[in-house]
Length: 257
Image 1 (cartoon, rainbow, N blue to C red):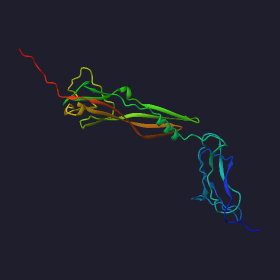
Image 2 (image 1 turned 120 degrees about the vertical axis):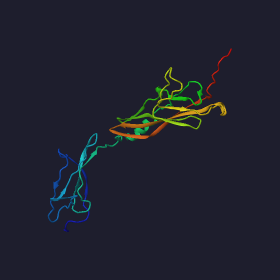
Image 3 (image 1 turned 180 degrees about the horizontal axis):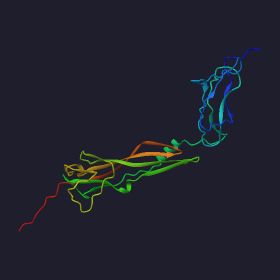
Image 4 (image 1 turned 135 degrees about the horizontal axis):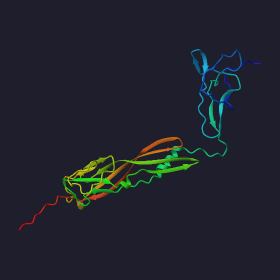
C-alpha cells in the first residue's frame, strides 16, 4: 500500500455544534503532526510558535448553524486552516430575504414631492430699485416620507427640503437655505428681507409679455433607513414658477389750487 499523498486533501465546510468562545476569539495551539496522517498548515505564525485564530462572525438572523472546515483525507493542498462560519438555513422554496437597498429605491420612487407655492412682496407689481421679498408657502416646506415593505422587511425614504435657488427673470439668481420670511404686515416697504430677497434694477414692461418669468428650484436631500441599515440617494429637485410684473415707482402727485 502506498504512503499518504501530499497532493490535494478532501476538505469542505460541514455543519457542526461549534459555539464561539464567550470571551471572543482566542488563539489555539498548533502542534506539528508526526510522520504521516493529515497535514493542515497553520494560518498564523504567533510569537510563541505556530498558532491559529478562529475568527467567528456573529450569527445572522433566522435559523442556521456554524460550519467548520474539515478534511477527510490526507494531503496538504486546500488544507489551510479556515475559521468557522455562520451559514443561515435556506430550505427549498424559501423566499429570499429582501434587499434593503432595493426596497429603499422603491420607497424613493414613491415619494410625492410638490413644488411649494411662490409668494412675493409686494403682492401685486414689484417696484424697480425697491426690495422684493421672496418666500415659499411654509405648508410645502416639510419632510415627505414613503415606505416600502416585503418579506417582513420595511424601509422608509425621507426627503427634506434644504435649499431653494430663485431665478428672477432679469438675469439675477438668489440662493436661500430656507423657505424665506413672509413680509410682515405694516413693515416698511423699503426694508429688505432678512434671508431671501432681490432688488430689480429694471422694469419688465419692456420685455415680451411685460413680465419676468420667476422660478424657485427646491433641492431635497433624500435618506433611507430600515433593516438595520441606512443610506442616502442623490438629491431631488422640484420647480415652482410664476410671473412677476416689475414697474417703475409710481410718481407722487400733489394737487394745486
